[in-house]
Amino acid sequence: MDADKTFGGQSTYILPIQGTDSLYIFMADMWRPESLKDSRYMWLPIQFDENDIPFIEWKDRWNTELERI
Image (cartoon, rainbow, N blue to C red; front, side, top):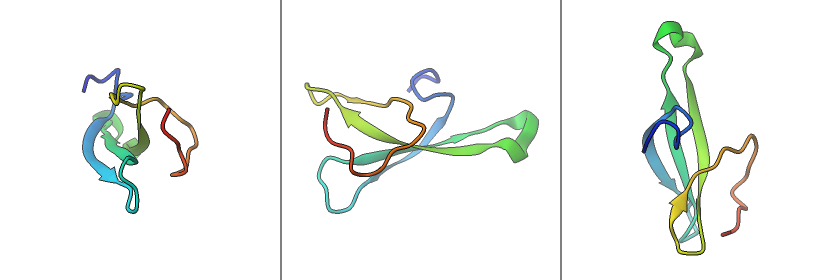
């Protein structure tokens, strides 16, 4: 994925949500070499459009109760 599509993060894992067949979490790290103590992890829900194409959008807050769009 391009950095603009992953909000500057580098993907590390796609976590399937147990007990579902269509909920996944995009896990990434945000490496800041100029300030390592400020490096972060990012977890965002993977959503699917009406054609089942996955996409990620920034959400400040979310939970695993997300529904398909």
